[in-house]
Image (cartoon, rainbow, N blue to C red; front, side, top):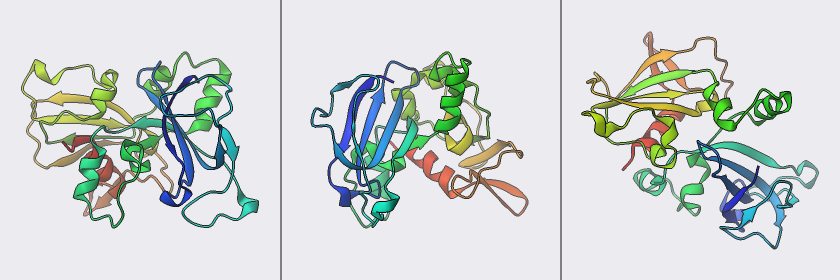
Length: 239
């Protein structure tokens, strides 16, 4: 997909992604981001803000990382998804991380991916009219009620993820829907008074998360947001 260069990290020691590049694809709603990591080098033409066309060379695959990747395991780490917030640094400052955030809003914590193989298979089948159609047809995995009058930052990036405007009525909370792997699907303001700061109001029991992207946990016969989902919600609602 055509887009523009949003971020380049030249220092392989600054991230477990090593040397990595993020492209922003603004011709779609919601705006998509693609990430290319563990690169050996970048095309010398690439600078932040440069437009990139389909099939343009971005760089050479490698094994760069803040940890050792053997040369014989060189590979491209590829992600496709959404960016959660323009206020990521505010969330980062509130945590107890021992190293500074060197990547601004393009830190990996702030990017949530969808399954690129399923995305491309849908495209190849001819059933995909646009990325928005694909995201709109993803199964809802979890829906939560968040007690907050703060407008999620992602709606400033992607207003298409909500059909309502919080200015239309008093906002006391938000109903937030997430798809596979935690990809944000929809955010609607409500005047409901939640009994908890975050309440799981729907979960698809048939969803198989695997070990990396568990979205809910069951405790004392109650469904609660997983640590991963809790982090996403914190990033979304941090002012």
